[in-house]
Length: 450
Image 1 (cartoon, rainbow, N blue to C red):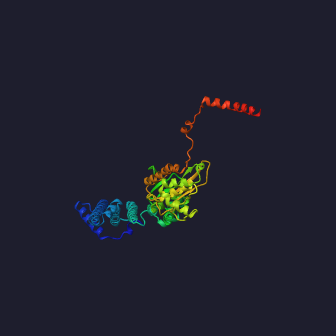
Image 2 (cartoon, rainbow, N blue to C red):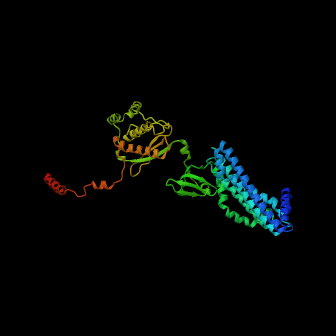
Image 3 (tube, one colour):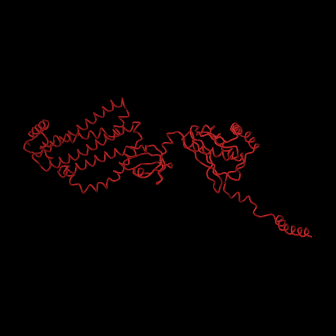
């Protein structure tokens, strides 16, 4: 029941009613029950609002003086999440609910309407207070290092959503004067509609749990989702959306279950390792690959002293040495290209921008109609984008400059400048000489036969 019978007698109410009765006696209105109820209600409402305001200010003052001294960030979060304000809003309706029933006699319609409105308001205020406390608690948990970047915000959104669903059910039950349990039993047909309404939330919750349990995604990760245009840093993970800031500063929003149901690339491992891979190839003209003669080896030793020990070691052993290590020189002294591969390995091993503790490899890929690809496989000692691109550019610029020193020509498709460099109109004297040459040859053959 939602009437005054469920509210027990209270000494404050009796004391307040007696004073109101005496006050009305002075004006000769002791038998005016309507005026008495109106004054009683007004006093209760004013008193409840004053009590809530006073307690709220008192609590805020305590927080400012005590929490700010010891933990200033905690006080700031309490203010930002409106925890104190929402919690103090519970006090006025509770005071009114405890004292208002004594203003009305019997089960009047006005009493029922006011009580139901107060109960609905109280339910909403309590839900808001619980949500603010939950948000504050979750914010404190996210500050821990082990949970800071985990995609757990979806769980908080689910909790808040469940609280509001329960609040709505309770408010409807109060409005129709029925038990919430009895109301839920009649919502079987409505369950399918609820499933459709909260489909994304349910899928997002399951996906968020999978992402968190398998440690697949953190806030701040660089991800690439091939099926979408997402290629950037994860800025937020909620119950229904994953926000990715692309490198052009555009925001891409994805449903969490897209990441679980499909595939995506996470570059967190690269960032945590501190190194980044270079795996790029350049085409070499296969017709410029020649055998390395002793004179050529001596020229290379003079031009590139870094290869002296390597060439002397292979000349002494009389056979090619293959080292299975990750950061070793792989090449030969049989051809100019094999010698160039050895030079690039030595250059990479002595380059401080290249990580010598990771794989360093210079290899040949399958030949194509454009030449034979020479691939450089190594890792930079930094993951910074600008530094990485600078190191990679400097590497291939060095390849382009040093390859001709080994007698190699890099492939470059015919351009306009190449076409213009060809003489398209031949010299007339050359044409006349070419035309007269066959006739002179035939005359000489005839004289020889005679």
